Amino acid sequence: MGRSTTAEHDAQKLTPRDDFLLAGRTGYLLNKAALLLLEDVERALEQVGMRSRYFFVLASLAGGPDLSQQDLSRLLNLDPTTVVALVDEMERNQHVERRRNPSDRRRYNLILTEAGRESLAAADTVVSAAESDFFGPLDGGERDVLHGMLGRLLEGRWPASICSV
Image (cartoon, rainbow, N blue to C red; front, side):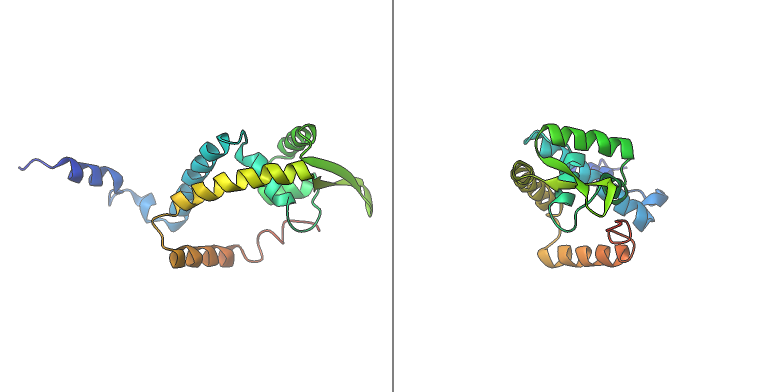
Protein backbone atom coordinates (compact mmCIF):
# COMPACT_ATOMS: atom_id res chain seq x y z
CA MET A 1 0.00 0.00 0.00
CA GLY A 2 1.50 3.32 -1.09
CA ARG A 3 1.89 6.34 1.06
CA SER A 4 -0.30 9.32 0.20
CA THR A 5 1.28 12.70 -0.30
CA THR A 6 0.48 15.66 1.92
CA ALA A 7 -1.48 17.26 -0.92
CA GLU A 8 -3.58 14.12 -1.38
CA HIS A 9 -4.18 13.95 2.36
CA ASP A 10 -5.20 17.65 2.46
CA ALA A 11 -7.60 17.14 -0.46
CA GLN A 12 -9.16 14.18 1.31
CA LYS A 13 -9.64 16.24 4.48
CA LEU A 14 -11.36 19.05 2.59
CA THR A 15 -13.70 16.91 0.50
CA PRO A 16 -16.82 15.51 2.20
CA ARG A 17 -16.94 11.73 2.36
CA ASP A 18 -19.43 9.92 0.17
CA ASP A 19 -21.06 8.51 3.29
CA PHE A 20 -21.56 11.96 4.82
CA LEU A 21 -25.17 12.30 3.74
CA LEU A 22 -25.55 15.96 4.66
CA ALA A 23 -23.00 16.87 1.97
CA GLY A 24 -25.63 15.78 -0.55
CA ARG A 25 -28.32 18.05 0.93
CA THR A 26 -28.50 21.39 -0.87
CA GLY A 27 -30.28 23.00 2.07
CA TYR A 28 -27.58 21.93 4.48
CA LEU A 29 -24.81 23.15 2.15
CA LEU A 30 -26.60 26.50 1.85
CA ASN A 31 -26.90 26.71 5.64
CA LYS A 32 -23.24 25.77 6.15
CA ALA A 33 -22.08 28.32 3.58
CA ALA A 34 -24.16 31.00 5.33
CA LEU A 35 -22.65 30.11 8.71
CA LEU A 36 -19.11 30.25 7.36
CA LEU A 37 -19.79 33.56 5.64
CA LEU A 38 -21.23 34.95 8.88
CA GLU A 39 -18.03 33.93 10.71
CA ASP A 40 -15.99 35.81 8.09
CA VAL A 41 -18.27 38.86 8.36
CA GLU A 42 -17.99 38.85 12.17
CA ARG A 43 -14.19 38.85 11.93
CA ALA A 44 -14.27 41.66 9.37
CA LEU A 45 -16.64 43.79 11.45
CA GLU A 46 -14.28 43.55 14.43
CA GLN A 47 -12.06 45.95 12.47
CA VAL A 48 -14.69 48.67 12.86
CA GLY A 49 -15.83 47.64 16.36
CA MET A 50 -19.17 46.22 15.26
CA ARG A 51 -21.08 42.94 15.40
CA SER A 52 -23.11 41.45 12.57
CA ARG A 53 -26.49 42.02 14.26
CA TYR A 54 -25.67 45.71 14.69
CA PHE A 55 -24.66 45.89 11.02
CA PHE A 56 -27.82 44.10 9.90
CA VAL A 57 -30.00 46.58 11.79
CA LEU A 58 -28.12 49.59 10.37
CA ALA A 59 -28.35 48.16 6.86
CA SER A 60 -32.06 47.39 7.28
CA LEU A 61 -32.77 50.97 8.31
CA ALA A 62 -30.72 52.53 5.51
CA GLY A 63 -33.13 51.98 2.67
CA GLY A 64 -36.84 51.74 2.24
CA PRO A 65 -39.75 52.37 4.56
CA ASP A 66 -39.57 53.30 8.21
CA LEU A 67 -39.29 50.17 10.31
CA SER A 68 -40.26 49.52 13.90
CA GLN A 69 -38.50 47.31 16.41
CA GLN A 70 -41.16 44.66 15.75
CA ASP A 71 -40.49 44.86 12.01
CA LEU A 72 -36.77 44.39 12.61
CA SER A 73 -37.41 41.44 14.89
CA ARG A 74 -39.39 39.66 12.18
CA LEU A 75 -37.22 40.82 9.29
CA LEU A 76 -33.94 39.73 10.86
CA ASN A 77 -35.33 36.77 12.80
CA LEU A 78 -34.12 38.22 16.10
CA ASP A 79 -35.79 37.89 19.47
CA PRO A 80 -37.69 41.12 20.30
CA THR A 81 -35.68 41.62 23.51
CA THR A 82 -32.46 41.37 21.49
CA VAL A 83 -33.74 44.06 19.13
CA VAL A 84 -34.67 46.33 22.05
CA ALA A 85 -31.14 45.96 23.48
CA LEU A 86 -29.58 46.61 20.07
CA VAL A 87 -31.69 49.69 19.42
CA ASP A 88 -30.95 51.00 22.92
CA GLU A 89 -27.23 50.62 22.19
CA MET A 90 -27.63 52.26 18.79
CA GLU A 91 -29.52 55.14 20.33
CA ARG A 92 -26.74 55.65 22.92
CA ASN A 93 -24.25 55.65 20.02
CA GLN A 94 -26.44 58.21 18.24
CA HIS A 95 -26.80 55.90 15.23
CA VAL A 96 -30.59 55.58 15.48
CA GLU A 97 -33.49 57.74 16.66
CA ARG A 98 -36.87 56.44 17.80
CA ARG A 99 -39.77 58.51 16.47
CA ARG A 100 -43.46 57.96 17.13
CA ASN A 101 -45.30 56.59 14.16
CA PRO A 102 -47.81 59.28 13.16
CA SER A 103 -50.50 56.73 12.27
CA ASP A 104 -49.98 54.46 15.32
CA ARG A 105 -48.95 56.26 18.52
CA ARG A 106 -48.04 52.95 20.21
CA ARG A 107 -45.38 52.26 17.60
CA TYR A 108 -41.96 53.85 17.12
CA ASN A 109 -40.24 54.12 13.77
CA LEU A 110 -36.47 53.78 13.79
CA ILE A 111 -34.58 56.42 11.86
CA LEU A 112 -30.92 56.11 10.89
CA THR A 113 -28.94 59.22 11.86
CA GLU A 114 -26.09 60.74 9.90
CA ALA A 115 -23.64 59.16 12.38
CA GLY A 116 -25.39 55.85 11.78
CA ARG A 117 -24.98 56.24 8.03
CA GLU A 118 -21.26 56.96 8.47
CA SER A 119 -20.85 53.91 10.71
CA LEU A 120 -22.77 51.80 8.20
CA ALA A 121 -20.52 52.99 5.35
CA ALA A 122 -17.38 51.92 7.24
CA ALA A 123 -18.92 48.56 8.11
CA ASP A 124 -20.21 48.04 4.58
CA THR A 125 -16.68 48.38 3.24
CA VAL A 126 -15.29 45.57 5.40
CA VAL A 127 -18.37 43.37 4.86
CA SER A 128 -18.09 43.81 1.09
CA ALA A 129 -14.43 42.76 1.26
CA ALA A 130 -15.32 39.69 3.34
CA GLU A 131 -18.04 38.73 0.87
CA SER A 132 -15.68 39.22 -2.07
CA ASP A 133 -13.15 36.89 -0.45
CA PHE A 134 -15.81 34.31 0.44
CA PHE A 135 -17.35 34.30 -3.03
CA GLY A 136 -13.91 34.46 -4.68
CA PRO A 137 -14.15 30.91 -6.10
CA LEU A 138 -17.17 32.07 -8.16
CA ASP A 139 -16.79 34.30 -11.18
CA GLY A 140 -19.00 37.38 -11.43
CA GLY A 141 -21.59 35.65 -13.57
CA GLU A 142 -21.87 32.71 -11.18
CA ARG A 143 -22.28 35.06 -8.25
CA ASP A 144 -25.05 36.93 -10.09
CA VAL A 145 -26.78 33.63 -10.89
CA LEU A 146 -26.56 32.52 -7.25
CA HIS A 147 -27.95 35.87 -6.11
CA GLY A 148 -30.81 35.58 -8.59
CA MET A 149 -31.62 32.01 -7.54
CA LEU A 150 -31.68 32.98 -3.86
CA GLY A 151 -33.96 35.90 -4.71
CA ARG A 152 -36.36 33.54 -6.44
CA LEU A 153 -36.32 31.13 -3.49
CA LEU A 154 -37.19 33.98 -1.12
CA GLU A 155 -39.74 35.66 -3.40
CA GLY A 156 -43.00 36.24 -1.58
CA ARG A 157 -41.46 34.95 1.65
CA TRP A 158 -38.90 37.61 2.59
CA PRO A 159 -38.65 40.55 3.15
CA ALA A 160 -41.97 41.93 1.92
CA SER A 161 -44.11 39.34 3.66
CA ILE A 162 -42.35 40.01 6.98
CA CYS A 163 -42.71 43.79 7.32
CA SER A 164 -45.98 45.38 8.30
CA VAL A 165 -45.23 48.54 6.30
